[in-house]
Structures are given as structure tokens and as C-alpha cells.
Amino acid sequence: MGIYDYREYIANEEACRELLREIRWPDGVECPKCREKKIWRLGEANNFKYKCSQCKYKFTETSGTIFEKTRTPISKWVLAIGLFKVGISANQLKDEIKVTYKVAWQMINKIRTAIKGDPVTNKLFGCVEVDETYYGGRRKGKRGRGASGKQPVVGIIQRNGAVRTIAVPNVKSSTLQRIIRQNVKKGSIIYTDSW
Ligand SMILES: [Zn+2]
Image (cartoon, rainbow, N blue to C red; front, top):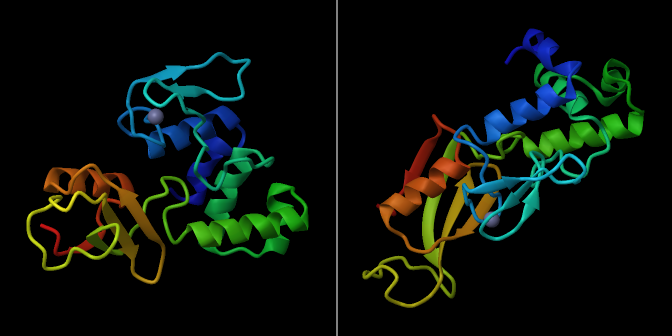
């Protein structure tokens, strides 16, 4: 998305949330906690928009992203990310999106940190290493997957960046592939010896 494309979004908070939804959940809204796809929509009066039918977690488009709990409109965040990508200082940003210097400075720092993963989808990207381990020690060299009775964990490490560990029910390659789809941006180079 180039800066020019942002014109559709900067005036329209709901369009920004829709953009977040589309990027975050291209196959429909999904529970951020348990990945359940059967989601209830909550009424307008509620602070939350969705409720998971499985774990009952209530959430919005911004839950678990850098936009969570922000008092700055999402439209300003969307524009700030665009301006950040082309290079902007906190001092310039405060004038461009009409926020205080302090807020602009905090936004830039949050974006800079988040950009190690994708700020919107929260996915890792670039060179990503995927490693399967078990709590209580690395599995390396041991055969018979899951036989130890320990909770398997998948570690996803972005080169020079974020690390993410995810508990998984098993380490079948279909499970690992699903975890990767959910956590790693398309087109990334994935290093693994797990399958
Ligand atoms: Zn859930």
C-alpha cells in the first residue's frame, strides 16, 4: 500500500477497522486466543465486537496488536505506519496527524518495535527459523514424537528479530504448517529441520 492509497482510510475509522480485519483474518474472524472460527458478534453497546464460541474470549480487531488500548484513532495509526515506512520523525508526525509530540514519539517507537513483525497482521517475516521443542529440554535427536508426554512447543525465530513460542497439541507436519501460516508472512524464507 502506497501513501496515496491511504486516502481511502484516513477519513474513515470504520474503513480502517475493516482493513485491519481483512489483513488480520483473510479467511474470516478468528479467536486470537484459541483460533476458533465460530465467533459471535456482540451488539453495538458492547465495548467488544466479538466473542469466541469456544473459550468465550471477547475481543476486537485490535486485540493483541499494537493498536490495542490506544486512545488515538486507528486512522491516525494507519497513516502513521505509512509515514513511518517512507521515513518520518516524531516532530513531523505530530503535525501531520495532529497529535502531541509525546503521542507521536510513542507511536513511532511502538511501530518501530512492531515492525520486526508485521504491525497489522502481527506475523513474522524475512528469514524465519522454526524449531520444535518440548518443555523440559530440547527434543533434538530423540525419535518418537510426543511419546515423552511433555507439552510440545514450536519456537519461531525471526533473524535479528522477534521470538515466538507456541504450545501445540502435536508436532505433525500439518500442525506445524498451520502454525507457520498463522505466524509467518507469505514469501518468508523458512529454515527448519522439523519435517
Ligand atoms: Zn477462543
